Length: 397
Image 1 (tube, one colour):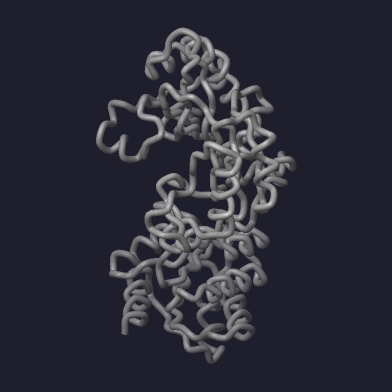
Image 2: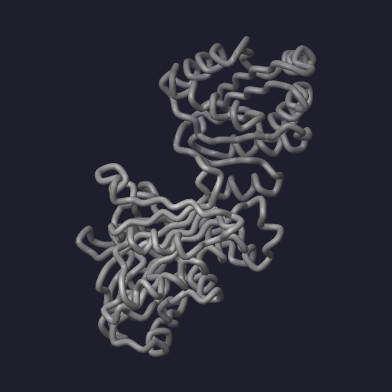
């Protein structure tokens, strides 16, 4: 689960991290009072959407020459003017895709005198099985581009889970970032508390880009991108309250109600599969034969008829879907249950696109019989390769 920048900063501040004063704004009428509540005279008006690249983004409704989703304002009047222009409009960035995201809230923040911009993130490094810091002197930039063009400028430091962040860890990170004086001293406090926040709140990603050194030599968290492990959210009702469903795909929200692993993609072939590995293989082979998957959908190993029905309805609700591939290898998941769920869903919502079904494993023959006897216009497949060829051909032809 993702949260907004201002929410992430409030969370980090509760652990002791240095952040600027700021006020979240939901209505244009709130902008003037928000700005007057801050020290000034420099303010930053920030679009709050779940996507990066806001500063370089463009609003659909505004001139191409208009400023992006993060703007400096030198007066209260400027804050109000920018708020009126940004709030309610659609911001398009590299991460939103061409559809963009509507800006429903802004964060008006006190400005900062920036001396240097650095990059810092904490994530789970699965190659070593530990939480790791990733830092770079190239803050405020496209970190993926830095990793591609100058990978030597990115330093990773894995943390011993028993020892936590030690003075040795801090020294290595400080050296990698080229910190000295007051900034190095601040790092000795900041880095351990960021790690503490990451662990205690079951985060999956904490990205500070940029982490700045101000002209007075102090460190400050200037931006914060925070994601949480969905499997641990039951332990954090306070975090759950921060969820903004307007930033999430409606189909993904619906899938979460049935405990379905669903991720919307940009393709035109809907997929229903059991098992994450099989789902990935299914998407890969669809791409191999020249089409694109419209989703990742894993119904899990113990799906019920109701769960399968819900999954099928979610797929058919996507207007981009021009064909559906159901690929089930029955182990715990029985093929006849899948068949019954699909038939129930088709009877309820109809079937307007080609459907290819590949069933193998537990009760596969029974599942095939149920579908064949249903009278549905379904194409059966012998194996995954055959299924992928058939659905791609059906969609293209």
